[in-house]
Amino acid sequence: DFVVQGQCQPVEESKLWAEQVPNHANYAGVWYQFALTNNPYQLIDKCVRNEYSFDGKQFEITSTGVTTDGSLLKRQGKAYPSPLGDPHLTIDYENSWAAPYVILDTDYTNFACIYSCHSYNFDYYSDFAFIFTRSPSLADKFVKRCEAAFKSINVDTSRFIKTVQGSSCNYDVQKTL
Image 1 (cartoon, one colour):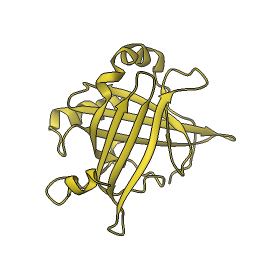
Image 2 (spheres, one colour):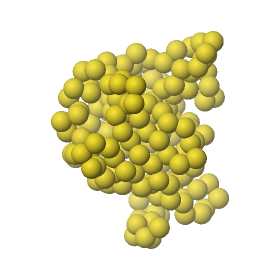
Image 3 (cartoon, one colour):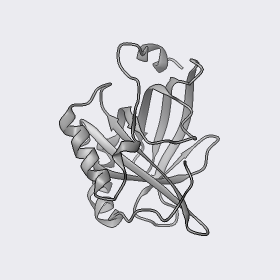
Image 4 (cartoon, helix red, strand yellow):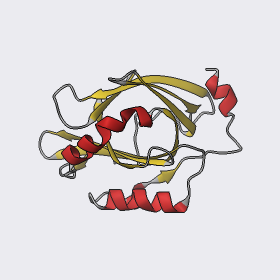
């Protein structure tokens, strides 16, 4: 279930933000989705490729891949500092709602562990998490590093679903969308 009872897990966002802001330019480039938790707003199911460009203030994001019905899809989005001053990025895709975007861990060259959580009234929340990689595959040591980052904030890593990537994906065609 996407909306569950309880509250968002606490994250030391201020510490992460202070470390990451000077390195935002290093986050730019191509990221492949390695795995994610259930997210009904994720319309692209397989071969997910995200291209982040950074203008010094915000990221422009182009996401491409294959939907559940086998169609190619391209989505545009942005990631920018929280307009409310919270110490994280906000991600905002067309036809979706803006959400917090917390980079729990990254080395900028191999992997990134992303967490987002939105609280609702009456003690309910929705969260989603992603593991991104710079290539269609990811070494086990980086998967373990993301698992440790998610476990440190009590995210159940058994919720992750691996994204289909690799030889069955036509990334060259996706780049032309």
